Amino acid sequence: MNKWINVSIQALVMVTAATLVCAVAPALADHESSKQPPLWTTLDEAERLATIEVPEGMALVPAGEFLMGSDPQKDRAAGPQEFPQHRVYLDAFTIDRYEVSNVEYLRFVLATGMDWPKFWRESPFPEKAALHPVINVSWHEADAYCRWAGKRLPTEAEWEKAARGEDGRIFPWGDEPAGWIKSNIAHPGSKRGFKYPPLANVNRYDKGASPYGVYQMAGNVSEWVADWFDPEYYRRGHNESPQGPESGDLKVFRGGSWNEDPEVARSAGRNAGPPDRRSYLTGFRCAQSERDS
Image (cartoon, rainbow, N blue to C red):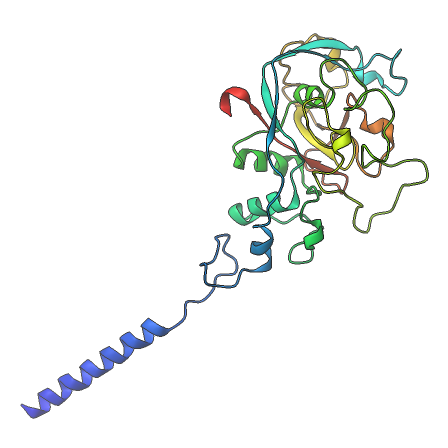
């Protein structure tokens, strides 16, 4: 009997010891996880940067007509892809007041596992760049971000109305040329090479805001929009909520950048590139139909 009692006691001791080891063994951190760690652990640098407060909000652009495209008699920098100037009707929509920032895109990356933009190097970017617009994102990545955020890329027509209002002004602030206090745009003799772009925080240049209070639709970064590019599209009579061509090879981006001439930043200016293009000149913002907001 004593023999069996001793065996039972030894087994009980072994089970109890194993249970204690399991109870006190620390859980291994999963540094590849996009989930936030428990509150009592130290945040990784990327996760810490993702908690930085950023300027947000959307501007309402009411339903109605606006002048889209350019009148060569008024705007001598206009190109044939902007002709003819024509009236376009749009339903009401909202659009991001600010370009999508590095912090906002980082939240998307952590949540979805998408690749970091190539210029992110410093775990993932210096804190002083947190409120700069994200760059080096393709059209596909911009589209994915907006969908993740419950929004979408603006159409070309929506972007232009949000930039210039209803009266056909050349720049968001009016017809006068871009100036230092209104936009982050290149001026004669100011072009700089790329080490890290001289970008501005997304909430800078309030004096250059559009009639609807949308910031930096001229300069800083050019911005992807939803449409395929067709240089003849304006001649085809799409004057009510145009969505752009059904297909194509190039996607439109608008607004000019920090390293381009002021003429490129005109509200009617049209540029395009392959949807997989990534550039240190290009970012984006999102929009939403009013009925979905």
